[in-house]
Amino acid sequence: MRIVIGQGSCGIAAGAEKVRKALLNTGIDPALVSITGCIGMCYLEPIVDIYDDDENLTRLVKVSESDAEAIKSYVENGDSAAIEKLVVSDEDSAFLSKQTRIALRNCGIINPEQIDAYIEKDGYTALKSCLTEKTPEDVIEIIKTSGLAGRGGAGFPTWFKWNAARQSQGEEKSDPHNLIEGMLIGAYAIGAKHAVVYVRAEYPLAIKRLTNAIAQAKERGIIGDNIFGTDFCCDFMIKAGAGAFVCGEETALIESLEGHRGMPRLKPPFPAQSGFWRKPSNINNVETFANVAWIINNGGEAFAAMGTEGSKGTKVFAVTGKVKRSGLVEIPMGKTLRDVIFDIGGGMKTDKPFKAVQMGGPSGGCIPADLIDTVIDYKALGATGAIMGSGGMVVMDESTCMVGMAKFFLDFTAKESCGKCIHCRIGTKRMLEMLERITKGEGKEGDIELLEELCYSIKDGALCGLGQTAPNPVLTTIKYFRDEYEAHINEKKCPAGECSDLIEYSIDKDACRGCTLCARNCPVNAITGSVKQPHVINTDKCIKCGKCYSVCKFGAVKKA
Image (tube, rainbow, N blue to C red; front, top):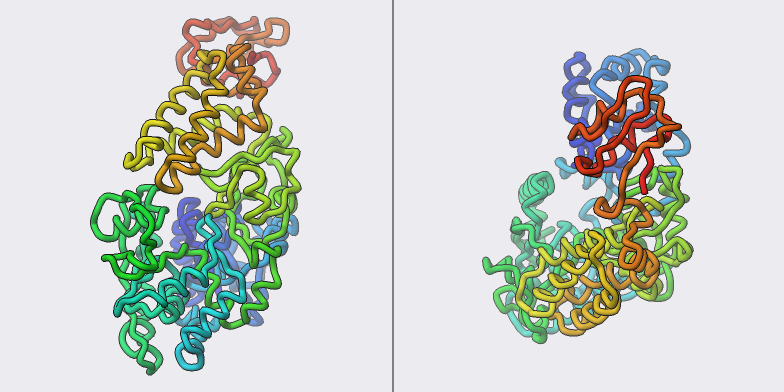
């Protein structure tokens, strides 16, 4: 048997490393224990997979240190009763069985710190076939046939960017971004000798594992000079970015790579003509590169057979929020939001109905419940006012205030504005100030119309994608939830009961049993009353934290 412990960031945060150490402390053979990355079932971490000699899998979920002895008993003695309570349910197993994995095909399966684990799964065979059997033009044609588009959000055809870089004049060409094999294939296709992996410094585990993978690939001659005995040479380096959101824009990323402040450049010239150090460059998202080796090995036609006419292949989403099964999901384009949220995600984890889903991250848009059957492709999502983005999917129920949600995302983008252009630097700030007033009950007539005017002005005048998409959360929430804005402004009420300045807590004396639970949990001692007697909230002292509302067992605490 062999034991594989999930040690992606989510697994480690949930205690996977403690589980690994506890297992080793039982005296179990260390040779049986290895690690893997995130399998995507983040809501079930820590996850321990046990493979028997025939590679049959038993998956254990929500494992703790105290389960180590039970796992040892199962591995060494076949005591299945010892782990029965830990075995993943059929319902949760459906989370993976309903997906189609290409970019994530090895996630949760191979050890990310051992190159041999990747090679055993046909790793680097695509690169070898490109270097020894195909011309750069052949590679670009395969990518063109596949219909692979940029997975960073814009959906620009990958082959077109590669071809533009290849046809540009210059002896040296650069190709920033990730995954090693996909990057090497891309570098070969466009004629690059240097590749740069740009990673935000907030992801030290990713940087550690990338550094390790690059070192191992160099030792095998897969990175460096005369790769696979050919004339192709390519070196790698890692750039730890400072964490600026604007560096998701390719020219701002290039500025950061060169040691400057991350601020977008005017285009044209485009990076394919003048990029990193003014040399022809190509920038692709991590997920884009993660598809390349599979496409080379299986053919562009196989990838193009999945998805819709205008959006080929699969797409990875990070599903989170008020959903039962959160985590990484990869599905063919053409599936619906309902498929992801209710079929794979298991629906709402509360008893409250589904309200909306934010697509595309902070610069995305909110899609309401009545559009739950929207097809997932670039065109259909764009028609709603949202964007595909890099795959963020935040699920909301009826307890979410949509004005507050717009304020939350705009607060982020306003802070992340690089400040280069006035529309984004000043416009987002003014919009945020208006939303803050509205959620405090200080909104006034005409605010909604002024917000819309500002949104379109910023979209039209901003220099880069950050400013051009920053208004999306505001525009879509006004479009689909205008009544909530009007309630905040005209009635000074928050229909969702989430904006603290617009709600008030009270205790129904007829329902109160005098259990004192609310008083004992109030952080500011705003609740008074005797045991077995109705309690009272001092509204002058109340900070509206909602603790009393959440702990009351009799429904006596009211929120209005």
